[in-house]
Image (cartoon, rainbow, N blue to C red; front, side, top):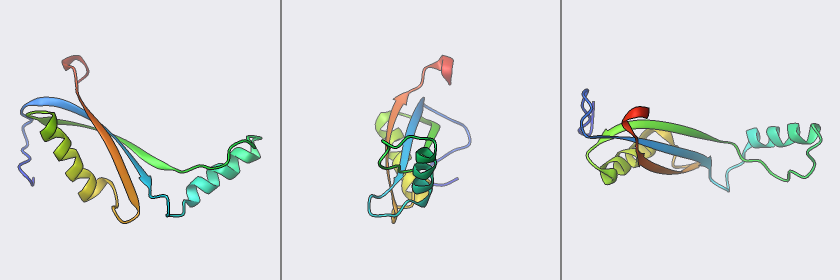
Length: 99
C-alpha cells in the first residue's frame, strides 16, 4: 500500500460520504436520458437532471484532519476525474456499533 497506508487499521474509524458530480460545463448525456424518462412519465415540471455518484468510505485515521486529507487524496487520485468532475465530502466519526 502507498502513502503510509497499512494493512492493519489504527486510530479512530471514520465514515466519509463523498458526492462526485460533473462540472457544470460538461455535457451530461445520462442526465439528459433521465430527464427524458421523467418527462415520458409525466413529470413535465422537471427542467434539468445531472447524474453523479455517491460513495461511502470507511477508514481509520488518528483524527478528523487526517481522515479528511486521506479522503481528499483518494478523490484526487481515483474517485473523481479532476478534468471533468468535482467532488465534495464530509467525514464523521463512526460509532463502534455501526463500524
